[in-house]
Image (cartoon, rainbow, N blue to C red; front, top):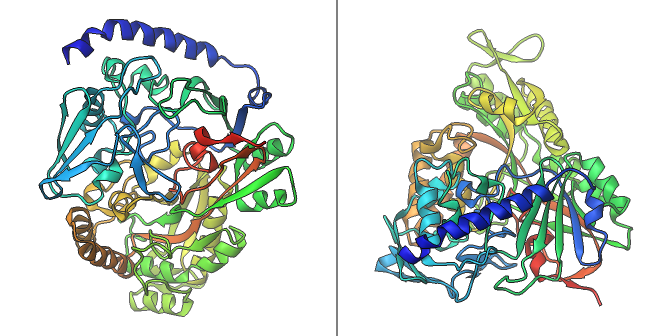
Length: 532
């Protein structure tokens, strides 16, 4: 709107001033413990940091961003609730239109009011082919998004999309700042302005991100006034710093979280998740692209042992991308380790065992490389256990660690011990994981899986409004993955957290793969209250 555009010069100057403040706060010096010195501060150790803090590039797209808000949010039970919108949307035209009315009086942290133009700008920019957004394919159903006045937004869909409302947890950005920049390279990626409960005050790359409570937050000023996310890649170091009091809380693997079980001053939280560990089986690789190899690996792996020995019981066997207790899980697709059947499949397909026990076919050894990200002990243990199980069936898996900069260019031909999983609706995690149209699209469909029956099921699940039709489609998909696995699904991992026991209101949600910044007991840190 013209009145909004006229304010841009002033807003741009303010944004520049804020950018300078962020840069000053980001100067090296002072450890994470400095942030936790006062009673209203919390310092949390996490394993990694985001590449960007811009929702236009995918940050916070599953909700719970501390800097931003979406039109809707999810509560502790993952039910949708209003956030920037006053209420849940009005749905019309047989599920093709969604109308949202914005909450009154919401302002960005720079003082500018939220308007419908900001919502339109956010979605249009994410959908723009020039924007390098990881959320683009997830919003494929949108045909148009239009502002009606200052406070109403109407989405028009190409087709009825049953899960669309849950997509609107996507955070909204200010057009008056982000609209003046290149969304792929602009300073907004590291110096964000949002409507959320916290404001970024500093980002020392590889060290920490610091946030302060937003005093003008529409939901009320948080009681935790300062929040620090300390970036500590090594699990053992995080545990040591937590034990020494340098951290108030930390993400920990199960074996290290267990070492705090007798510590009365700290509390352990265990969150079930959709976070699945799986081995990608690239179709371009002459070994992993063979359906017999894929089926044999699926039967050779001992998932129960991985849960007990690697996860210390904090997880579940994964027989596909959906957890066993998910209502969309296809009953009867769970399967125990069956080495004799794995060997039979390989024998019948012409993969014959050599003197060293490793099979070969037409002069090609049943051998491939499996990468896992360096420093990730849980993935390392999964990779080694997988290789051990595969060898029992006569398949040689060479395990190697590397950084993602090394792994990513090799994903087309080499297997990767990967992590996936989204909450909210089966479409969210399955479409990007399996649809052939996304083969090789960054970290989407890493295995370049191409199965027409799975594509049809995914399209039906995405476009149908009938729950029974959707259930049938996703059942079909999961059974197709048994016949022709594009991945070997291993375990669904419970996320473990240990925190100082000095706040009330801490809860966990069922979590997606991504965790640390948004998920975890601090998903609702703005609601915490100090213990009396």
